[in-house]
Length: 285
Ligand SMILES: NC(=O)c1ccc[n+]([C@@H]2O[C@H](COP(=O)([O-])OP(=O)(O)OC[C@H]3O[C@@H](n4cnc5c(N)ncnc54)[C@H](OP(=O)(O)O)[C@@H]3O)[C@@H](O)[C@H]2O)c1
Image 1 (tube, helix red, strand yellow):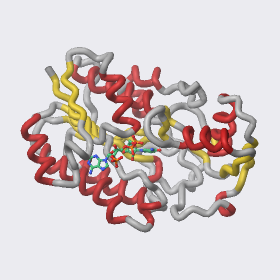
Image 2: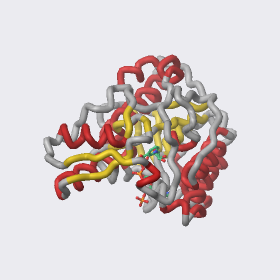
Image 3: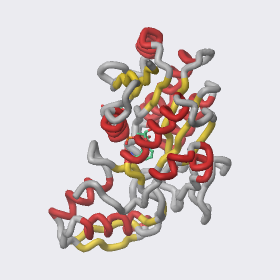
């Protein structure tokens, strides 16, 4: 029976993987988070991986505080980069497959066509730089897939959908930027795609192809469009007003455009395409 170790499992994606795993029989899923496996500790990481001997590791652990990372870049590097090195230091030279999750914020955002996996990276933020450094550590292991995703939301944890719902219930109006364009991703869809890839490879339905892959839901919108859709679907009265990024200053710069081309994951792992749903179907209501 294949052993699949999920790290950082108490977050949005980890929880969705936990839910999705219940529909996949015949695999031994092990879920850990900082309390059971602190990936910033090389000793703990080595001890745990060597004792569990997983066939697959899916790393969902991350430091996602994009603005806070500007003043605490060391912490972002420790969790988003050094921790990834701690994993690959242990699995290099083994058959263990590694799926590491990264972000659209590795792209600069000055494109007007969707970014593919060969597009140049140039992160604008400390968070983006720490994630790009983590990708490089992941890819040192020949059995690694890096999946870049964007604008993740789920019923678990904190995310944009929950923030807009909370403020939308409390306030008469909201200001949301309308000059940053990207694609929201329902974490349950990403979790489903990851498990589909793992089970498909185990059952020889797909060949495992290492490297970088983009994955988001389909569709394109601005944060303003996304907020307006959330308010509409929740039937709230709050008015959403568009503002320019320059009038809504935050510590970290974000890409103006981070839409991703998903052709590679669709071509390599055909059935994942069915999970590239339109983003505006919510499971919250
Ligand atoms: N959220 C987004 O909008 C977004 C967008 C693009 C890409 N991504 C990427 O997608 C992946 C999943 O994101 P997510 O939203 O599910 O993240 P999340 O909800 O923030 O979950 C991350 C988990 O990692 C844990 N963690 C932190 N430090 C750790 C350590 N040293 N060892 C083990 N676990 C640790 C966190 O615990 P604590 O809560 O206790 O810190 C948390 O449970 C990440 O790689 C993220 O960078 C996310």
